[in-house]
Amino acid sequence: MYPRKTPLERNRQASFSVERDSKRTVLRFHPRESLAGADLRLLHGLWDFFENERRAPSRILVVLVPPDLLSPQSLERLLGGPDATSSLTGTKVSDRILREENVIQRFIENVRGLESFVVGVVGGEIAFQLAAPLLACDYRITSSDSVFVNTTQALPRAPLAGLPWLLTKLVGGAKASQLLLDVPRLSAEDAHELGLINHVTAPDRLEEGALEVADRLGSLPRATLISLKRAIIASSEDFQTYQQKELMLTHQLASAYWKK
Image (tube, rainbow, N blue to C red; front, side, top):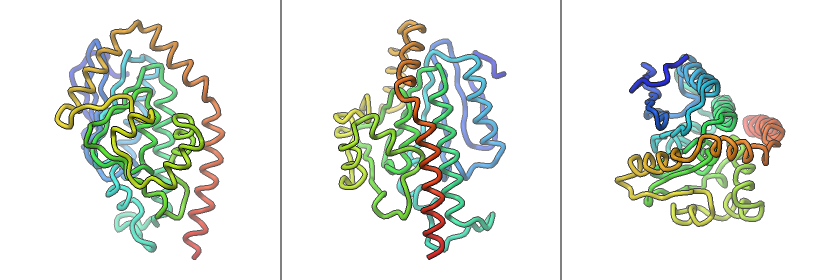
């Protein structure tokens, strides 16, 4: 088990670090191309972290995501060209997409399964199709210069990792359809007005402002935070059923695309 009060726990594969104190736990991802591009040791380390967090939950868990991890450029690297194959593994793009979907879905399941109140933080350009990990958090923070870039129209497959489900829960079915089909760019201010984002900071104070918000939330009684988290999760327990259906659809669309 991870010690509860160490200043820094670092995965030496240049992937993520964990900082703990009596107020909060900070899970800080380091720049990389994608979650699925991580080696197995990183992913096992990440899942081990969530397992220990489940056993001994923090009052507040802050997840700091670097801009490049959810950026349009990251999505482009993930997709590659129509005949792209990984030079390292020989894996086709369709397989990389499915692996990324599986990793993101597992990340979301872990976030939703915690009694810790999870604050997600990311800035910069965010590919809508990779935004599900942020939207799955209990409280979402970004900077005023951030923008969600919609790439769903250009892709031959369903959005990644429960995005339609999460959007529908957050803004309703009609608005979710509009966002996915007819909104090429969404500013941080507009995302805040819609309820996709809970708090917007100045660009140069994203991390500092996020930690201030986390400390304010963390001042609430632990029982209040746990009860609220349980109530929110209980209101949307059909997520696993949706995940199974979406994963089947992803396989079907990816298979049909690569048979062209």
